[in-house]
Length: 131
Image 1 (cartoon, rainbow, N blue to C red):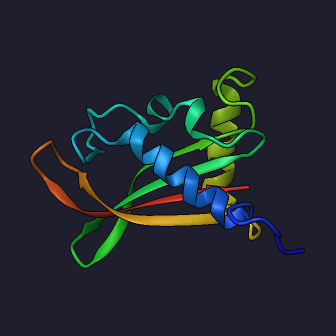
Image 2: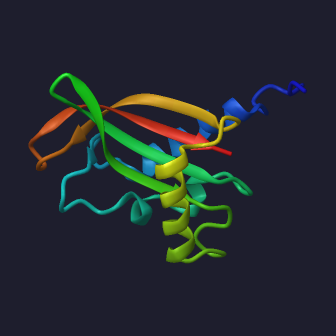
């Protein structure tokens, strides 16, 4: 069934969520994904996530001639108040092994990513999946 009101479709949810996640994870217009960077699970806030939804976040960066994942995070329904680190870890393992569900709403945007250190900024992609 198609949503009747504008902005109420699943894809609209991912589109709104990606903007809020970006606001949480960017610093000075760059996502820091080097070894000393704060993990995504500590940067994304509950306010960025839609109520009642599960969200997966992936940051990729260009490495040679391909993109590779440099930071990931998964946020179960009720994060962080109704979940604990074990719930987050279990969801992250699930997403890593199974991927996001086919019915997930997905949004992507091009972003700059610092990979090896703060000065090594590369082209990258922010991908947010909501289900």
